Amino acid sequence: MEVDKHQLFRRYAGNPILVADDWPYTVNAVFNPGVVRHGNDTILLVRVEDRSGLSHLGVARSNDGFTDWHIDTEPSFAADESRFEETWGIEDPRITPCEDEYMIVYTGFSRGGPLVCLASTRDFRTFERRGVLMVPEDKDAALFPCRFNGRWGLLHRPVSAGSGTTGVGAHVWLSWSPDLRHWGDHKVLIHAREGGWWDANKVGLGPPPLLTKYGWLVLYHGVRVTASGSIYRLGLALLDRDDPGNMLVRGNEWIFGPERDYERSGDVPDVVFPCGWLLDEAQQSLRLYYGAADTSICVATANLDELVEHLHRHCICGYAHAVGYRCTIAASEPIAISSG
Ligand code: BMA
Image (cartoon, rainbow, N blue to C red; front, side, top):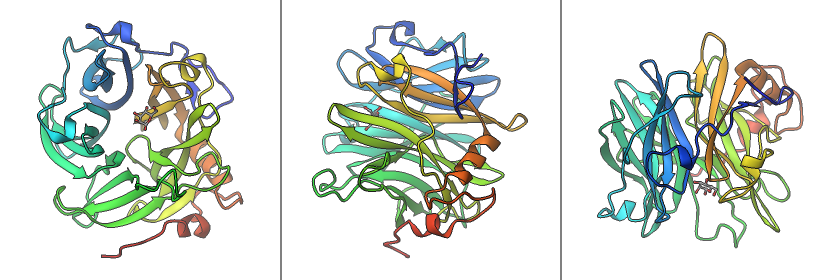
């Protein structure tokens, strides 16, 4: 059952689908889940904030992806506080199925600030740490599910010391690696705009990039800072299928933002923060899982063709395009600082 008939993403009427009270042990909040299909199940890897204030990851399984969640009775993937990179917990996992495993890119809250960590699993019962990918401050990262000319691609969002005070902005970057250890060929892919735009100053990746017949669909958040706090909203971009460093189209407007009570109030008001989505190929329908106000977990659904058409009609260049158009203005936005 859906509400919001006139929106691109239609909220599930049973939202929020998971709250702290549903957890088998005492926690403060559950939010920002990664998601995958595993066998017949939808698996959410949930950021669980306990009453110490620190987060670990917990697994919730459901057959239909909306109801009847079976939740691990203890932390599924706990932070290892003896590791510098996880001193103050682990957060916001993005899951990418790669060959026969699931790659989990998550934020480690280190003594040096938030950074990007990698782990892998085959069953969501045991997890193998694969190291730190990016140094602080860096978060909102996910891998592409395949290699491009033998190299892995990572989208991530570094923040420089000057962000916020010098107005340099925090952008989504694309970096490459032959072995998931050494990273280079860095380039800004989604640039935070300036001034009054909804995605000015700070943007960050939402779920992992999704391969569609149109190219790689990217959902990213923009952070608008107001007199009474920040508003986290979501917008779209489309990347070239064979070379995701090429932007095809970028949306001008946000397409989803905090509107409902459960998104507008909570531990951090006015936040919708997705870390995972699932595409039903047959139906061309998308299910978006997101944290609401850093407090609960919600789901919304959209039709892929509608999203892509809307994106082309509302390109950052100010013109409406037909689906399949490559916008040279959107493509010239990224600023290459390294060509290898
Ligand atoms: C971001 C991340 C998210 C969080 C959001 C809003 O920087 O830390 O985990 O949901 O802020 O508080």
